[in-house]
Image (cartoon, rainbow, N blue to C red):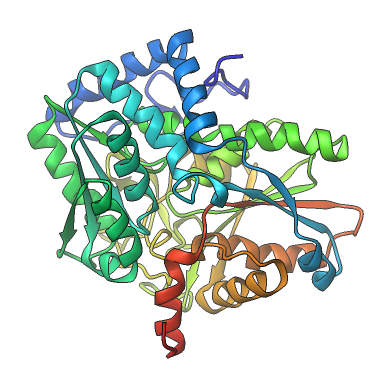
Length: 405
């Protein structure tokens, strides 16, 4: 089977790049030709056995896939309900799911004859993965990162520079992920002839939401096979954190047509439900256009993007992928939120019960999973996408706790 062969018969996106009402391509004319070229090349690559074989080889020998399915025994015992399992994307090379996508897009960069790569990053994992892919292929790489996230994620900044990437701090706006995407888009408009923008999530104009989802669907395809081998059935529930939504889209998509599998996406509930205190567009936002796509967005009455907050740099974003918006509207996925303090508590609990440092992003999904699992039967299985490792967050957590690092 082709690596990128569809795992769902669902017909979205349509020829306009729409998932139901959501998605599309809202960009300046400067980018239209580049997006059309990218769509053509990606369509051809999906059908190219050589492209798929090269990507499969990299995912196996460079990334270390398949990532294991792990039974969180002591955590399950502590909860006393459903059996909790992790899909261990934190064990990938570079420590997160992001490398699945950056390798695929780096191969497309070479296929298109582009000579330079740019990327945005929040928590730094996509930045590291982009820098890693570019180092592997010998491509120059510039990563835009909000100055606040540079402060919060110093280990990842250092790793990007070690890989040869140039990290450009963004000092405008909230100095977080939204502003990094803004600056990367500006760069791309000025350099589109020789530059490919490796977007890190299922956001942005078509074909990025579809393409990133497809590259990340390796997570769900593997998990599906592993669950059937381990239990001879599919999981009763799957939970994943949602910022832009790439790990969740990659995990959910191969299960979308399995109505018996409940799917739950967990957004960043921040400090409270008040505007500016959270980053939960699917829970509290409304449809609008952000970064070239129509989706759920945190915005004011005039349609201006609202400030957001999360203790997690990777979830600190005012929008979400359009396919998640479609899944919300069709009730296929249930979306909820988790507060900062709950995620921090889950980070500690998983460390002490399982010996795993889960990323703060993932800790949101785990915290909500503990609540849900407690009300489920011990005969049921709940699967969490453990999207990244949490050593990157240790210094920031120590600062929040007032402890030495």
